[in-house]
Length: 193
Image (cartoon, rainbow, N blue to C red; front, side):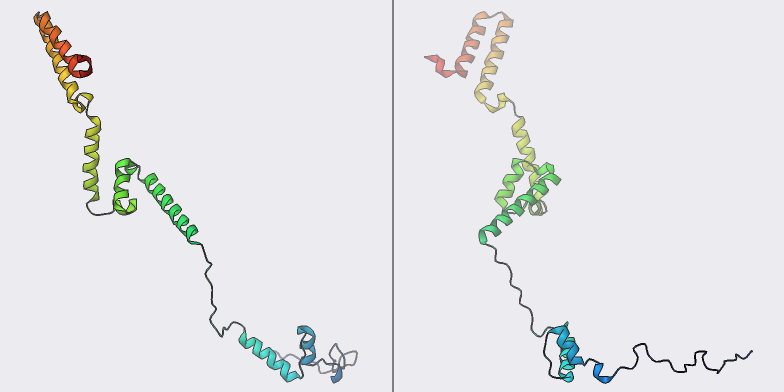
């Protein structure tokens, strides 16, 4: 290894010790801690020790709570709360019927009203599906009944007209006329006067 030779000669300008850029500052020109904090904080600290203690106390206090903070809940009138709850229920029902269009009918809505449950809770109840299918099938059958089945008087009239037609085809004009007139009189009893 080579040795590095360091020169021990002095600098060309002759200065061995270079003073700090501020030059020589007298102790009287250095500001004390209390003066700096008095100016910065607008306080009046009697001594440097009091100013240092205030800074330490502030540093120790920052981030710590000595008492729990009490947060007051905003007071909402009862009528506003009930309206909010009603709107929430309406939105939930609308979303349910949008996602389950099969249940968007009067049969299901009357079941919901009778049960007092939400539509989602009613659908998830045990045994609901079987009962609802039975009710739905019954109502569909009732709606599909013809006019003749819904009114027995009209069924009898049809039978009399059928008898009149058969009598006419058999050549018995008098029996055909009587059956036709009887059918009309049975359908409209107010005409008998």
